Each structure stands twice: as C-alpha cells, then as structure tokens.
Amino acid sequence: MHQDPADFNVSLKVLLTNKKGEHLVLFARSTSTIWHGKYDFPGGRINNNEINVPFHKLIDREIKEEVGTAVRYTLRPDPVAMSMCQYPGEGKKMFILFEAKYLSGTIKISHEHWGYQWISITPSVIKNKFPSVFKDMMKNYFVWNNKKK
Image (cartoon, rainbow, N blue to C red; front, side):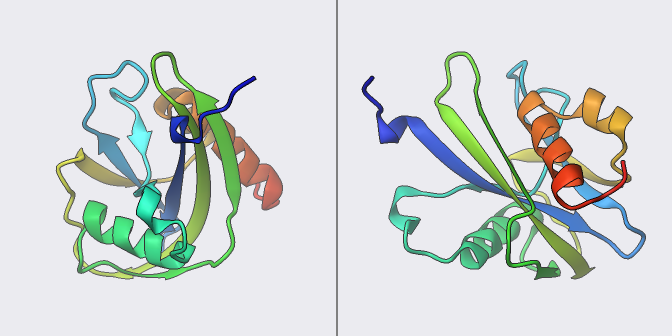
C-alpha cells in the first residue's frame, strides 16, 4: 500500500487550565458537520517547514495566533494524550495534546474561531460537544494521566 506523507497532518493542541480548574475551549468557525457547533482547543498543524522546530515553540506560535499575544501560560513539556482519525474527504490527522496552566492575559480569538468559554470538562461535555477525534483524545487523557472523569 502506497502512503503519501503529504496526506498526513499532525496538530498540536493545548488543554489550557485556569486557577479554577476550568479548561479553555474555542468555538470552531466551520460549516463542516464534523466541526460545526463543536469545541476546539487552541493549537494547530505543524507546517512542513517546521519539522525541526521544538514543540514548545510551535505551541507558542499557535497560542499567539489563536488566543492572542497577551496570554501567558506555563506549558507541561510532555504530551498528555493523542488520537488519530480520517474524516471523509479529508487527509489523515494526528492530534497531540499538551497541558498548560493559564497565568494571565486577555483572550483575543483569531478569525479561525468565533468565541471561547472556560468550562469544566465532564463526560457529558466530551460526548456531546467535541468532534469524535477529540472524544478519543480526551478519553486517552483521563486514562493516561489517572484523572477521574
């Protein structure tokens, strides 16, 4: 079977947690049935020219692009969960989740999203408000990190 590496995307996502233990979710600006009305996390794809860039720098670029340059956070350096998928008509995707503690700064959403909210992530929220690949990723997150949800 021939594999086309250009048909595979890797996205880094960040589970940003505030002092109340709530997580930042973004509202995806998409008409896709997969993403419309679903939550997203800050982060995005690794570009072809970024293959030698450290993860923390890639994440910092995405945080600044998606939630603003004023946001300050502390990043856990190792991934906390992963998931893979292929939606109909799209390339294959791998999502790698990192944790970060929100320290300060005004959230300023990019054009890629239409809003945000700080929420407590519960099984019901995971089931009803995340795209399927994020459901798998969050299940992995709770199991891998011995979190109770």
